[in-house]
Image (tube, rainbow, N blue to C red; front, side, top):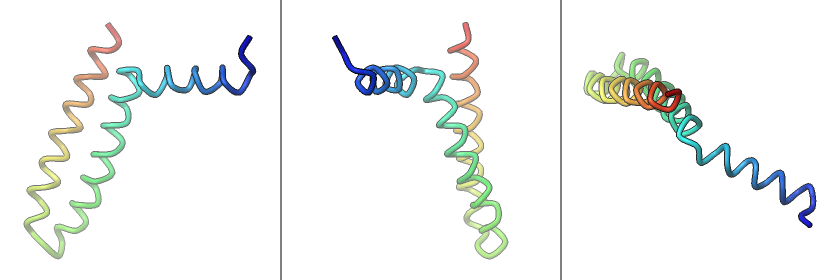
Length: 70
């Protein structure tokens, strides 16, 4: 018989390694980086390229999130 702590860790592992959670993590991570790059682009125009790449990754995250709902 497993104790409550071990069962909690197993439930958390199931959630964290699910496709839905990973898609949300991609959206949050690259969304934050994209905003930071947009702010940084005021001083360094090359960061607009990185903001664009982050925007593409956010779109990929939304695509993965849509796939995981089916």
